[in-house]
Length: 347
Image (cartoon, rainbow, N blue to C red; front, side, top):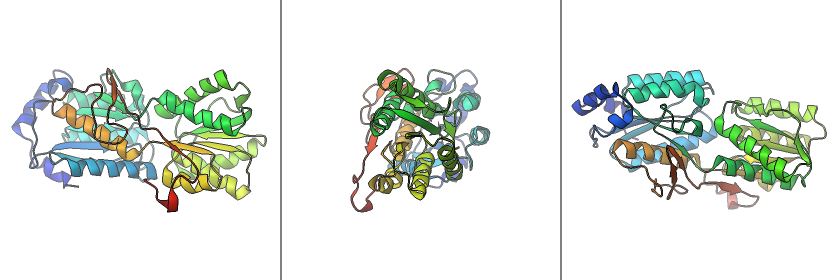
């Protein structure tokens, strides 16, 4: 990765002119006013939900790969140390002050960070989000990129849950946060799927548990769930921490009659699937999402049309669907037992 500090030695006259125009409208007014080259690259910052967890470490690899593939960009990732919308807002404010050209943001709470993103766009900064489809079409962003249809992802997750539960019984869910738009979209789509197809499967709580994408909290929740619901037959999760932590507690207690289905990573789920502590897992490559979202940002900066069928340069995003300001790839990855030989996990 190139030294991103070099971008801020000075701002070109074109960039200064662009920022002046920003007061008159959104990034549509300014995005084509600046050009870039290897000596003065576009600065694109990616802000994940939280740093220091496997998922967003994988996303950072995608951002670094994009940076390596494009001489006219300086792309990097910076995020909060805990899953906190207020900390994300502070990082966004800092990036505005640095005069970055674009941001890619994975919001903890889309509505909470929306005003800060709108402020960025008012300053002429291109804004692309991931896992925030509710912001598509608002003044807060240029585009939202999704790896797939969230409804389809949730339905697949709950279809596997129902399969493992033989179509009946009680289950409980866990998500990173109740304000996480995508986690709740998967969960609610899954509930609708069960209501229509498996009415004998019922949740034991009105809302899923939250783990804040934190392994320790997910583990504590797992212990609480197993103590509180002795007749539980199923568990569905929307965070990597939730699925792996629950599997570890099942293993410790030698509980083999609860179906564990949800989001994970190949490197995390692989051994748990192989040994039977996780029934089903699914994912998308965080590196691909980071790469593709940065590709959208660069295309906007270069004045390109964002159109149906465009190739964003990564598997699952070769021919995206574009509807207004919402972009969808086809990047769902289903994980199964014995899928990866000799621990050869892609991420």
